[in-house]
Amino acid sequence: MTQSQTLPDHVGIIMDGNGRWATARGLSRNRGHKRGAEVFGEIVRHAKRLGIPYLTVYAFSTENWNRPPQEVAGIMDLLRGYLRDADRYRKENVQTQIIGDKAQLDADLVEMIAKVEEGSRNNTGIHVNIALNYGGRDELVHAARKIAAMILEGSIPLQSVDHSMLERCLYTAGQPDVDLIIRTGGEQRVSNFLLWQGAYAEFVFTPTLWPDFTAADLDAALEEFSRRERRMGGI
Ligand code: IPE
Ligand code: IPE
Ligand code: MG
Image (tube, rainbow, N blue to C red):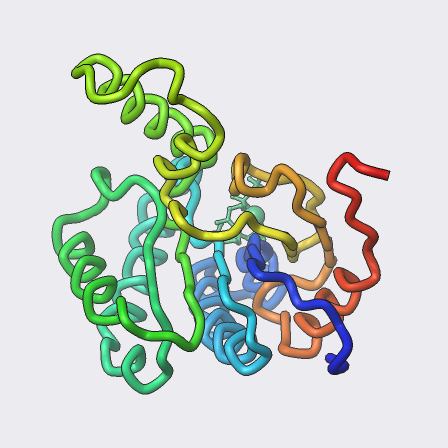
């Protein structure tokens, strides 16, 4: 990172490749997720040091329920471990928010999430969204329902529905659009991540598997981002 580089306001990361990392080492896929969770912590710290205001990480998609139950349970336990460590938020000044549909999550997890969100609300170091049971399509359906309900109850007229109203109904309400989406693990697809917010995002794809991703890799992606020319439909 050089001083003159333009930093994105909001970075999204599709943390992919945990399973392949583990399989290549003869380990269970859950060991890959465990290492991935450690890397997540390191990358949050680095992003905070760099002064990135918003970071959204894709931890579990609405489609990841299609995995074997023991893998799903392992991922949920790792999240519990992260959330349980409440002291970390105070020390590290990280504001943590979970984005996604919480209705399908276990009650204890929902309770832990509420505690962490409440306890870290006033932290100013970096805002981290953990996308858990998150799907971009699901988020848009939720937003559509909220808006429809307001119209039906007569609290807003149909004419007031616009971009900014829809944005206020997303999980990321009040946050800037994602400027840069990094995907590790070699696949070059969006997999239902931040569909609305990423309308003009720059993408950086790397073959590096998430458990091997380092602070230097984040620096490289940011450097790549700063070289991109963003026209937003202009010339
Ligand atoms: C990403 O790694 C983590 C989650 C989707 C929970 P994967 O588990 O998808 O790893 P690969 O893609 O199978 O290697
Ligand atoms: C995307 O990875 C979801 C997360 C990283 C949480 P997947 O491994 O689930 O995506 P696909 O199935 O390769 O598109
Ligand atoms: Mg994957």
